[in-house]
Image (cartoon, rainbow, N blue to C red; front, top):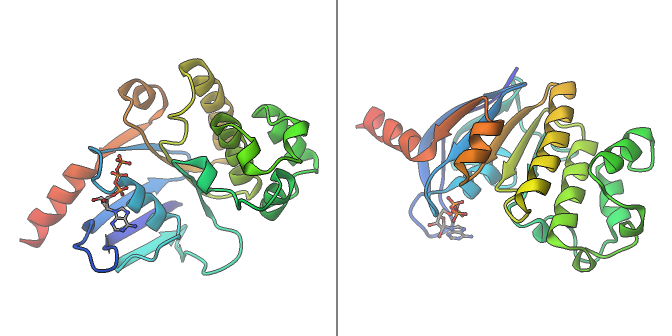
Length: 213
Ligand SMILES: Nc1ncnc2c1ncn2[C@@H]1O[C@H](COP(=O)(O)OP(=O)(O)OP(=O)(O)O)[C@@H](O)[C@H]1O
């Protein structure tokens, strides 16, 4: 069981490719750290792997099947900027409801675990802080019962203590549900605490260019 990308490439319209011929695998229950210098394409790769942008080349399989074109995403993305992750005109309760049963037992447990307070539910995204939106994002992603999660520097705006608290809660759900995680971080200490394996996008790109030459 794995999220498998084979020889994928992506270019923004009218631009040179951000990356080409990248292959990587995230096994279920694995926590894979993706590192690279700024501007190298980590966010782009995360969006492609989660199905927000189709790869220009190559293929992505989730436990052996193609990413679905519609419906609940089996690969959920925790965005780098959580304010971009919520529809600006929807109250939090409605955004959570789109993902799953936020008011059922699982939803209540998840909200408690991530400290998402009841009073936030009637607020619009701009009435929540970055950290509050981030916690809400995690709950929404987990409500969708994904097989894999991708976290793009998702907790970078939190203080160190809150960051570890949120990751602890997150990892306990990942382990219980046997989900795989790919996470991007510029923090070596976060990577060493969380990752079970680490890859460098720069070296993946070098490997693919030496294979193709
Ligand atoms: N919508 C877009 N249109 C054109 N080019 C883009 C677009 N978004 C990103 N890029 C370019 O794609 C390249 C990779 O950007 P990306 O955001 O994926 O890098 P990153 O490694 O996540 O960077 P950072 O660590 O700074 O967040 C950059 O050169 C960036 O300028």
